[in-house]
Amino acid sequence: MKKPYVILDFDGTIANTNNIIVESWQATFEHYLGHRKPVREVEATFGETLKHTIEELLPGEDYEEVRDFYRDYQYAHNKGAVYVFDGVREMMELLKVEGHRIGIATSRTAHSFWTYMRELDLDEYVDVLVTMEDVKKHKPDPESINKVLEQFGAGPEEAIMVGDTKYDIGCANNAGVDSVLVRWSHYVDEEAMEAEGYVPTYYIDKPDELMELI
Image (tube, rainbow, N blue to C red; front, side):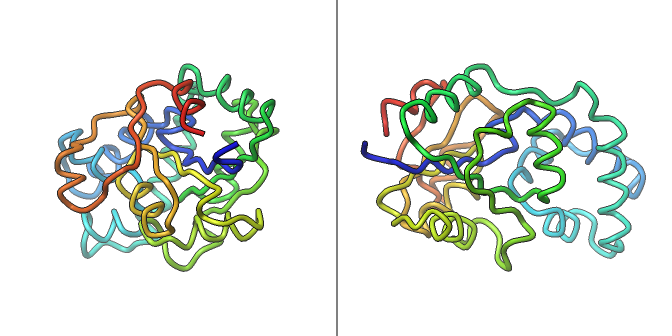
């Protein structure tokens, strides 16, 4: 077994939360700015913390007020809006059957993560969880992956990180862990990402391709 430990991002990797995230931001922009933003601009924020996005796109607004507006909108409109990407449930099941252990490194809170995972009936597959509340520095800083590895008692050479944004790739690269960018989620300008120094070890188009790498 080349990679006993598989570390997954949540949003855009395990579950398609893209639409509800975009709509929540658009509602927030309409409320505070009076207009929506191009979808590509919103997608470019995927993987960031709420604090970073708010400070960048809504400068001068009160962070906690905007955060609460965004979260309240998402919680009020997320019923039926989030689903597991095709093949991911089967991938996670096969990982467990073959003896791999699954860690999660997410910029979500633990509450929102577990809420979605229980609704999607995926919570049994998670061995280790590190959320935004567990770290001081967020992706692409390596702290979240390092904390997952620490809980597993594993070295970076034993793990692989799977995510959908440059922040996941940067986090893995900075932690010395092989990285996988998934292509089943949303548009990513791969040339621009690599030009910024976020170069994945692998790209995969379908979840079952992960098994060939580990």
